Length: 449
Image (cartoon, rainbow, N blue to C red):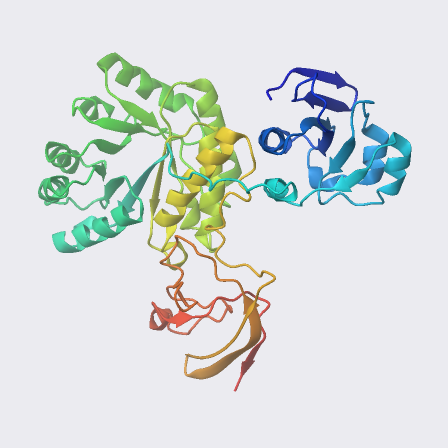
């Protein structure tokens, strides 16, 4: 039951998806532009299974949920071959005027198109495949000269378990790390992929000799010797406001046959974030075939907000612009699950972009706090700063999330570093590290005694 032909005219695009010679029921499904691809896929499958002929009418609106029966009446055309029509579940308005106008029954479908099979007595969609991704995660261990080899290895193990592909050894300017080569060899021997984040020639050389595959970073100041290392380089601008400063470095690396990826630098909010984000788009346009990396930690670490939303959004940007690696870290309290978040976000965005559907109703595992119809009423007394604080009668949904460093699913308690969701900062922030408490939001009623 493949698409046979397309009829377009004015404000509606019609796609007939059945057998023109079939005598089975013909059903017209009305939708908007954004949802059209997934609606076509779903109704084609359900039509095959349930034995009806589907036709899709794509009205000239972006979001199907914003349709009203008034808009439908004005913009829709219905062929005489159609037996009935199904509107989006969110469509508001009376259906009877549509029946009188077009001479066929109108009804509302489900609010989620993926529930459509159940209306026809069929099984819902198969589980979404989130096993695939093509964005590489570099996880930086900061200030490695201050850490012992055992501490570095412990952090690297945690990052790898959370989804990191490459362990980035973050050095300190002005301090030469004598153990760069030794630590790199140890990590590589244990199966880690390693990058070195330094402009110090001795550190970088020793790390590359120890097995580091990537060097962060390279510009005009070190391109002469860095291009002789045999490792891949991350090219950054000499002046972050100008892509032209990267062009000279790129020409040098192309001439020497050195592998590289580009990073035009993501600036924090209040320091040029919006302009820096557009530079990534400009970089992709100027070098369409180049590998690009985005340092998302510059935004998550310097924005005091839970990192999951920021990481998910930036993963979407990377997927659309074909940015195939991200650099992140987990230093500040609200970024303690950043790697897990990016690991799931890259899978979600790969699926969404490939299927040309919004990243919605594919997985709820990046939703870390939500109120649903089924609520759990809890009361918990917490002791913060020597004061008794009670949260009263609030409802929560505890999602089955892979961001398990933020959630203890078995008892519905979160282990969140340093801060309560009720917004109460302890006087000594370190006193609440790994303190369990229930999920909450700013709307919680809080009383102090």
